[in-house]
Image (cartoon, rainbow, N blue to C red; front, side):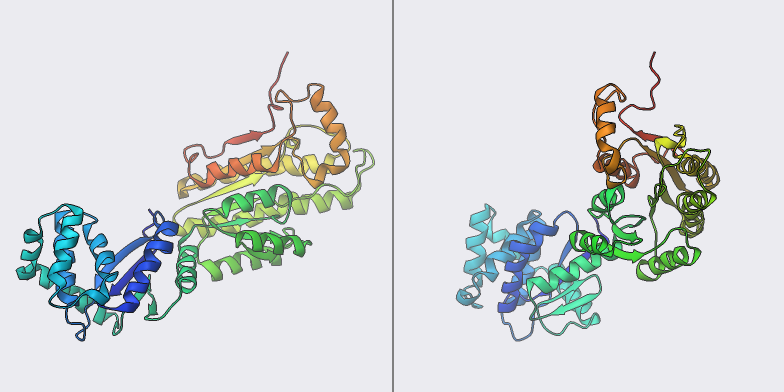
Length: 408
């Protein structure tokens, strides 16, 4: 359970609004957040409610008898507010005790237990110290919701608190393709900061789908990289995972004998220099935090020569060495670094040659005779994010359908 988010409810068992909140809790909040949020009850009997304090003491006694009985008692009595008086409270105790199979006399003896009364008084003092004057007052961590609030309001408060305690991941180049699949996968457990270069429309649809924060970033630009780290630091104050995914293919495929320096410089700056120095900035931050994880999405082109894609291959080969360098340097700082080498993955980057690749795969190019999907890479990032590979820093993870195998 994620105990970093706590919902504490101060209620009076003779309060109609408290009955409304209890129904909200049972019907909406517990089913949705039971395994993600810690729910605590605090008795806060109001002086104007004649039988609320005895009912709270009874709840304590039920809790002593068996875990969970107090919660059931709270629901039972709140549902019978209109038919309960100081004189009929004992009847309610007997009815509920009979329903759950415990001795009513043992429960009622709790009304004379000074320790139980003191425990209720302690809840009252705690609430008063937090400024509680009316019920129900519900705190989501330290944010208070008082008396009249909707399930939508308190749900928004819980979601806000969860986002503030979730690990934070930067995913570069996340508006489409592999990066988008990674961002969608990580958004299940992380607060994602997703970068895009030109397709703001796709980035906005990602934000709408996942709740990711989006920021425009040309990874080749020092100013943009600094702005990305600065935004993440200011917005979330921490960074747990960096996924270096942003990259580009050359604008024209030219033979290595005719390829231009301009194309070479563009790919080296975007595919190698950008992620290398973004990692430098992120690693310094992570080291100060005490740890983190970094993943580089490279390519089988890091070791596979394509003579009409030389600048792309060189940029990915260089990035592979960047992984090794950072893995060796950062291991002592509890920062694990990984290289993911996708093979032929169905994205818009290969759309123009997809049919040619499909034919090659059908003819035996890959041992696993299918093209990879973006989700195949995202699942590998999931393993890294969940810490399943924390003793494997520097590892190269081939997501390529077996392309890297050598067969005779």
